[in-house]
Length: 142
Image (cartoon, rainbow, N blue to C red; front, top):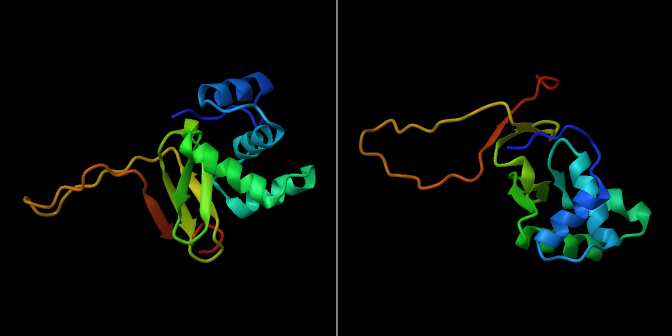
């Protein structure tokens, strides 16, 4: 998992990511990557639209960009149990998320590891687990 060291990503690095994914470098794609890179937590599609609209990008452009990014595996699309799609750059690797039941705050649990162990000797095998979501009350809401 790659932890981000800064809130900025260079244009050459963005171009390289897009080129590796087989995508052209467009202003909307650059803006979407910058928006996601700057966020310490996954963003909903609505939050991304809200961040990019002042720069002149409309909803359909942002949604199309996120769809392309998902197909090309530039981003992970997450289901955090609230019927909204959330996105984060795939370079952060897979990790668990925590969502507060009261305020809705989402936290990435990069520094935690989880192990699922069966209680019964002959428990059903799960296969691979791709997402783990924990829900509870955040420190501020407790």
